[in-house]
Length: 131
Image (cartoon, rainbow, N blue to C red; front, side):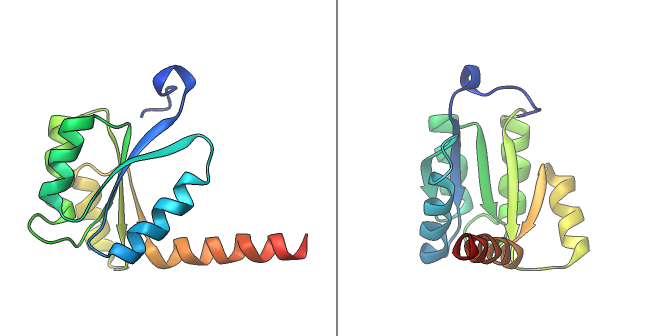
């Protein structure tokens, strides 16, 4: 997204991809609570993700690295080549820094650890209880 306003300052349209249905639904709910974000599609494997992005042309994609049929790294490489301005965020439970470097080399704009996301959410919810 290169720091530019999306859709003339409107909602950022996000596609999510993860083969864990429960995690995917939780992530969707978390993202949709942000007024500037809208989940416009979900995919359960890398092939479905690439087809979905080609069909609906979102602003961003949040992609699990470990998915069936086409892994997240390969999907990121394909999406970066076919959609150079698409914001690509990789998700993983794997803290291996060499894997993270490989994902960035494939074209991801960032890599987030799933565990850190949960910790940040728990911290935020705990702060609400105190307030």
